[in-house]
Image (tube, rainbow, N blue to C red; front, side, top):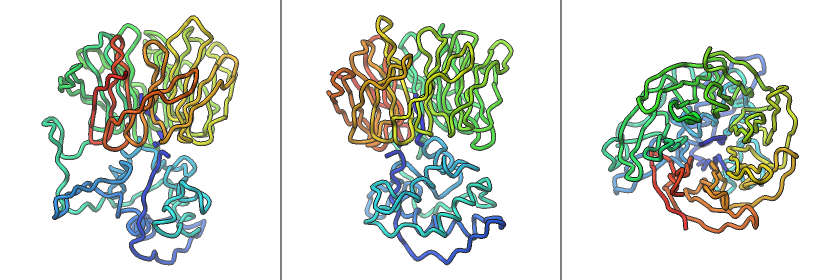
Amino acid sequence: MMKRIQHSNLAIPIFSFIFVLMSASPVISVDSKTEVDFETQVLSILQNRCFGCHSAPTVEANGNATKPKGGVQLDSVKDIEMSLHGEVIVAGEPADSLLYQRITLPEGDTGIMPPQEEGAPLTKQETDLIRKWIEQGADYGNWKGNQSESKPSITDTNPHQSPVMPPITSLAFSPDGKSVVACSQAGLHVYDFPTLSLQQTIEVSAHNIHDLAFSPDGDQLAVGGGNPATAGIIEIFSWPEGKSLRMLRAHRDSVMAVAWQNASSLASASLDRRIILWDLHTGTPIQQLEGHSKGVSSLCFLKNKAILVSTGIDQSVRVWDLASGELIRSMNNHTLPVHDLALRPDASRLPMIVSAGDDRTVRFWQPTIGRMVKFARLKEAPLNVAWLNSGSRIVAACADGAIRLVDPDSVEVTGEIHALNGWAYSLAVHPTDGSIVVGGPNAQIRRIVPK
């Protein structure tokens, strides 16, 4: 599962924008009572500072290919919404918008955008204008995008792909291990395993989809997504038929994570800061958990299914008692947004989870006692994390396209494998043979067998 958050997210650090100063921005006046017009006030900032490195993939006259830095594309509304799981600009929430987070970091901070070597920081007037525009709902007006038709798109050798495909945001193996399901803004794609040849494409109702999970008995598949700042949608499909069975609607923003409690109950997490527990027989919410101060990015049930753990853009890992609906632990050791978490597959010991954060750490927790045990700092931000079947190591998909294996006892990185070009957004571990599939930009998917 990707988070995602991020996720990130969204990565990532998760938001490695490379801004280019192409020309001076006009003088900008920010009046708190005036409606900000995107096309006349905000668009020029993006054109002058962002589009140089964050536009549609092209092939230049010399044959060299250029792709948007960090998988972030800003020259159309559609691509802004698709980049980093919809976290680049979160309508109404500047603090949750990765664009605003990065342009307002202190001067000299290594994560500030634009980087010092690429130009001066945005002025306070410019950042205030962007903040106000986001607060007012991030309305693009009539602007849809300005991608030049004179620059041909990069093509891909995979015959089932269109010239440019969105990133794979989540992956899951079918219970029998014979298929792997990938979700992206292009829908659901089912691949044969281990050949990774395309078997089936399943249409989904949501415009953006971020996570998927199989039911405990394996006969249903839950897919979470929605329309940013408008509605969250969970769609339940039959497996392996891929028939849509039910739609769950109550979230006010995109659903970032889904997790099954049992065959008739499902939890969902959203950028609207809420977690909802659903009765799948009636399709209605039976419990709402509120406490995250920003969007929720990932969910994980402990073995007894009575305790739920969540992570969020607010940098926290939270533990919930589902019997009472109360928050019983809030752990805040991460210093940047948290994208994902996973439970160690070992019921004989005290439950342990691992979380992946934009602060470039994977952190190991004992959630029932609210204690962080240890952490490992990685070269790049981990975006997705999972345990190998034995529980002896965790594997993290990172923003540089590599996967890293970490020993949870020594917290040493025991392996590093370059998997993809661009960010490794998502991964899944095969249920029996221990191999890994990794997903990334332009619908890249690859099988890796760790040693």
